[in-house]
Image (cartoon, rainbow, N blue to C red):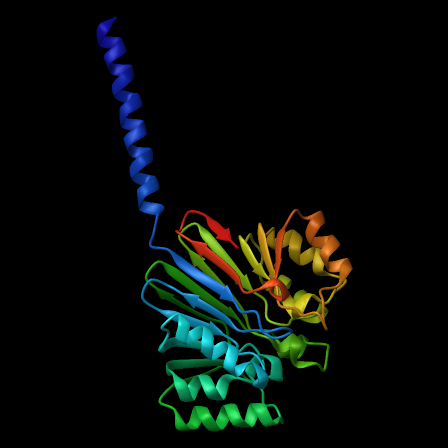
Length: 273
């Protein structure tokens, strides 16, 4: 009987030890995502243990606020600057980012735009040392335990003339946690994304500043996020119908009109404030 009891305790101890080791393996250095409080515009800074990724740069009028965030957090080098599309509220501050920081690579969609902000961005890019990567196919890369995938829409299937639906959609998987940044995709863009992608993400940057789309329920049903961030302002608040959908899916939603949304992950779980 003593041998049997000893054997049982040995199994319990070994199982506990294995569980502990497995858990320790999944716990990584903390990484963070900041969705900046700059109104109806996108500027998202992802800080991995040894790399920085920035998605969009806000409007021209947001340059001081974005630069203030970068200085306060001692961010001088950006490994990847991803421009989802060329609307002013996404590319407007890109020229200053390129002028004031060391940007190693700029990733952008494969279409032109006739606008002052776009032209300023292209001029600054030409004067910088950044590698320019124009995407016509999906792109994947890794930084340590972080795996990044950029989905490029099939422009031939984009029904809208609005370049919102041409937005690049970026996903990031860090350990057992995951983030999805949906740019400004609208109905056609959401259909396009769901045609080629599915699966859960812990955190969703809601597309197009919280404007409601008829198929947003399909996106939420596929992504099943625990947390969501909406880039909006007093002038352009999130649509009440969208908010109802987020509540129906039990998503804890944060709005940049209330302040910068800060998310963290240790590879095991995500926290947001």
